[in-house]
Structures are given as C-alpha cells and as structure tokens.
Length: 201
Image 1 (cartoon, rainbow, N blue to C red):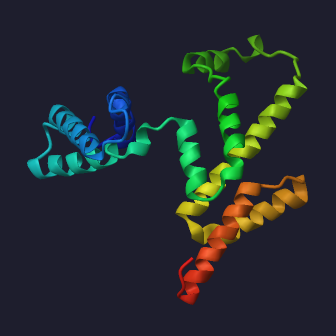
Image 2: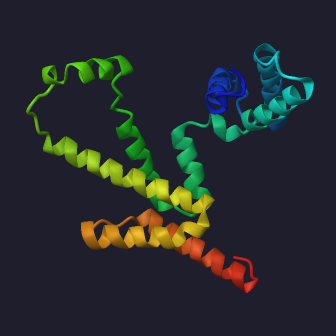
Image 3: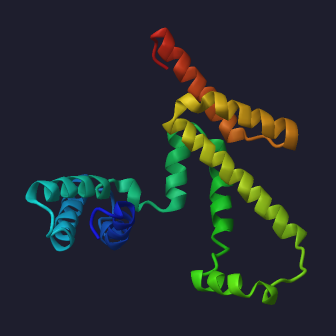
C-alpha cells in the first residue's frame, strides 16, 4: 500500500522500468525524467486514491525524483566501475567485480525451506567440512566488509575515528588489512583537514 513500504515500492517500480530504460541506449536524462514521472503519476493515481491532492503531488515528486536517477538502473559491475573511478579506488575494481561474480554463483534458500528446517532440524544436519568453501566465504566476507565501511565513510565522514579503531583491531587481532577502508580513511582525513583549514582538496 502506498506510503507504508516506500522502499519496496520504489524497487518494484524501478524493476518495472529497467527494460524500458535499457532501450534508451545511452542515458537521456530528459527522457528518463519523463518516463519516471509518468510511472510515478500512474502508480500514485492507482494506489493512492485515498490521499488528498497535495499528498499525491508530494508522492509523485519523491518517487519520480528517485526513479529518474540513472544509477538505479546500472548493473552491479557498472556501479563498481563508477564507484572506484569517482573515489580513486581503481586498484580495487577487479577485486570487487570478481567478488560480485563469485557471490552470484550462490543463491539463498527459500523462505519455505527455512520454515521447514526450523521444524525439522534433525533431518538436515550433515557432517561435511569444506575447507576451500569456508576459506572462500571468509575472503568474500572480508571484501564485503571492506566495501561496506568504505561506503559508510563517504556518507558519514564523522565516523572516521570509529573506522580507524576497527581497522586497527582487525590488523592487530586478525592480521587482516582492510585496504579500501585505509585508503578511504586517508581521503576523508585529507578532506576534513582541508575543510578545517579553509582550503579546498
């Protein structure tokens, strides 16, 4: 229902628009905005009849603004390429793309399966240790954590001291270097230093 699950609605609408956007070929911002607005207007009209006119206009503006972002329709490899180029992290591009490709090899179990095993756990236990798979899971987990916290630093630079402590702890206790986080931390520190000194980076 409109307004109660905005994120899910936006994802659903973006998926419906994905093929249409691909047909544009290059990014035509004007046409993309028009397509997004028409989609938002149709959706709000169909799902938000109970809303007053002013509230419907607000929803149309918000939904069309989000749906008009070209990045919403990028593939993950393209998002990675844009991200590393924007923030000078090109050295990590292939590592991130490889990690994504490897993660795509695995799928989540269905909710139906999880409901079943919660009632019948004794029927699915198996003694099987795959050292290679465990090693690969740990490797992908570390890469994902490295990317996650690097991204958080961009949105919330004031957490840089906390991130610095996390990096130090992982290095000292696990012997693991979070290289992307270290590089991003240096960039954020440089930007904040310049900002406090009244200079531009």
